[in-house]
Length: 342
Image 1 (cartoon, one colour):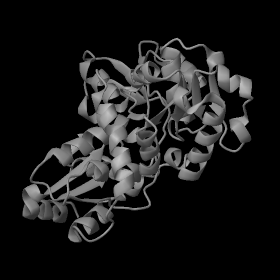
Image 2 (cartoon, rainbow, N blue to C red):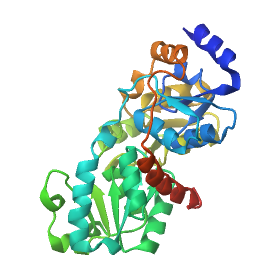
Image 3 (cartoon, helix red, strand yellow):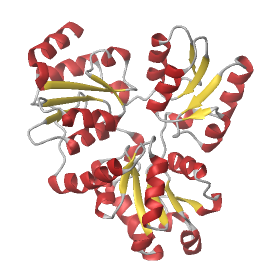
Image 4 (cartoon, rainbow, N blue to C red):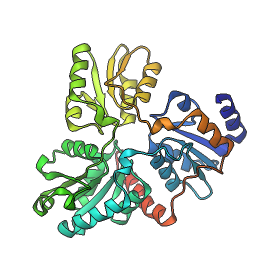
């Protein structure tokens, strides 16, 4: 299958680009033209004037982001249309619109800036675009918070409660001014008074991979490897983030390992495929998982369905975004690009 994939790649040449997310299996990463996070990969593909076919080896919201940024005529495909994201699915259009109406009826529409994490579907990004908000990544969330507070007094952040809380903690926002919006309850389970007092309203979504890590696991690893540095992703709980030595996005983690001196012991709390690949790339270090945690949706991208997609280039598993959604979501993404530094 690998040889067949390489053959098709050679035949299509510059017309094809294969994007592989950091969390993909090493066999898939080895066949990609670019490796990275979802937004950086989408930017690379859209900026390439020769590319006609973009095959995104990641989950569905990532391919959607590529489709939003794609130039006219570019076709975006994903090897498995069922490669979703549980966190993204925790904030659908009906839930978000209802919550926005309830929240702004109390706080006032002119007092709330919606911020949406990249890990969300196109409709949610479009909602932010229409309502003066922006998209953010785990790398630039603090800059997005600063930008939002310059516009209005409150932030409605979704869908990841933990990235939002960890960012708020980093900015020294008092805990009693950050409230959770429980999507199953009227007013998110909050009183009108607590909503009026809040500076940050956090949607109650989470990543099933990163919330599996615990402080007990960190303590166990420290006893076993007292010389180790522990780095975790900001989608982890605040307790885990506070117990770690460093916290950052997937790109941050990659650079953290890259810049560490030879002989370092680094324990990482994120998706296992990235950690295993880093251990292979840096054999002069001891790189280990905090605890094995794999994303089953990322694992849905296989050599078999990648080959099938390439054999049917431009015809199957095409990811499209309606024009009105694409326009509004593009506004939110453009505002993110204006944020600096990233």
